[in-house]
Structures are given as structure tokens and as C-alpha cells.
Image 1: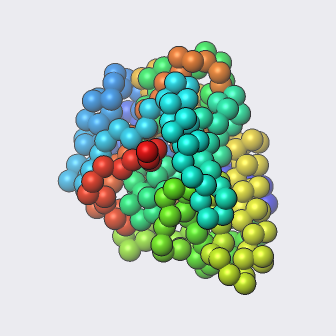
Image 2: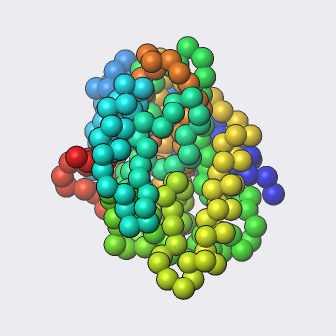
Image 3: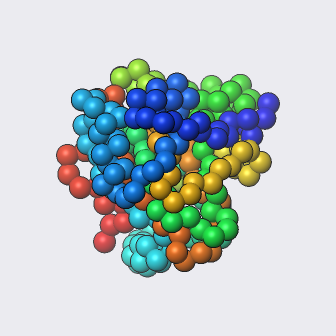
Length: 267
Ligand SMILES: [Fe+2]
């Protein structure tokens, strides 16, 4: 049992059709020659065709954006568990492995494009973990817990009313495996017994991140990702010029497609 085996270096795709096939089979692909955000969105449209329901840039990942969003989040009230978000978390440490948009529950995007506009001079390598493979590298009792016990996926400031298991097969027959730092048991008597499973899930994800394969996206390269199946993030960096766009896509397979703007920062 070795969680590091869940870390994936995506293969390179030479066309939108090849990228689509790789993402379907292996969870991710890398494409190159993407000049800007518009080109990234055009690629998503070419790749997903009539299956694409919605696409748009959601996050500018840079030190300056982190500082701006962090100041807003720091002023927001703590949630019922006393938790706050740190959107300006020190960029020199690795990010927690996560699916983008976890705060939006069923409306999280099922496709994700990570466009490297400008890489860090050093550091900032990307990692991708195959959530399904990760579940195969944890003890059977944790695997059972992940598939069967509904947990709370709420992020501070974004309460979700409907708990659901870490892993599930969606109505569109897609496997969804979730990980982020705010996973918590549903409040109640079973809470004490459930925390150790969540802590073990965090430990498995961190082991895969820290000991597994990583890769570097150069300028104009883009990772195309199944955001349901894969967890992603980056290792530490301190280059103020680093810039990556996170572009979210929803297909006909998505559990739910949001109709309005998605604001993950809040006011
Ligand atoms: Fe992300």
C-alpha cells in the first residue's frame, strides 16, 4: 500500500481529440502552445464540443491575488466549527491536494484547465493525484468509509446542506473522489469515530503529494483535468511573477451546472 503511486504525470496530447481521450481514460493530459486565456477556452470548446455546458476562468493563481483575496477572507467570520480560510497561505509551502470548486458541492466543475501563463523561476511544480488510485492505496476500512459515509464538505463561509461521501458514482456515471482541508464529519454522536478516517485520508493525500511524482508546466502549457477524479495542487514557490489561470468547465456529465456567477472569495 503506497499512496505515492497515485501521483500522476499526465501524458502529452497533440490535439483536442487526443486530450479528450486521455482525460477520459487517465484523468488528465498536458497540451502546449496555449497563448492566453481565450486560447485555453477555445481549446476547451474544441475538446468538449456539444458536451460542454459552461466554461470560464475562475481563479488567478498568483502571489498578488492571494494577498488580495487573503485580506478579504481574513475579515470574514469563522464558521460554526471556529474555522477560517487562509487564501493567502504562505506560497512557499505545498498546497493541500484538492478538487477545485469543492465549496460549491454538486456545482463544482467536472473539468479543469490549469494554464501556466508564467511559471515560477524555481519551485511551484504541479502535482496531480488520481483519487481513484489513491483509494486503492489506503486500508480497506478507510476505503469503505470514503465510499459509504456522508461527510460535510463545507468550506468556512460556504455551508453545504447536503452531506455526501468522499467518493461516489454520479448520476452521469462518473467517479468523483474528493479531498480538501475542510472535510469534517456530520455533527453528532458518530463524529468522534469519524475524525480518524478523515485524518488518515489527509495523511494519504499528503504522502502522495510529498513523495509522489511531480511535473513542471512551462509558459503556454496547460493541464486538462478530470476535476471529479483527480486532486491537484502545486509545491512551494516564492516568485512574485508566477501566474497560473484556473479555468473551470462543466459538461453534460456534471452533477449540477451553476447558473450564476461563482464567487469563491466572498465579501
Ligand atoms: Fe486548485
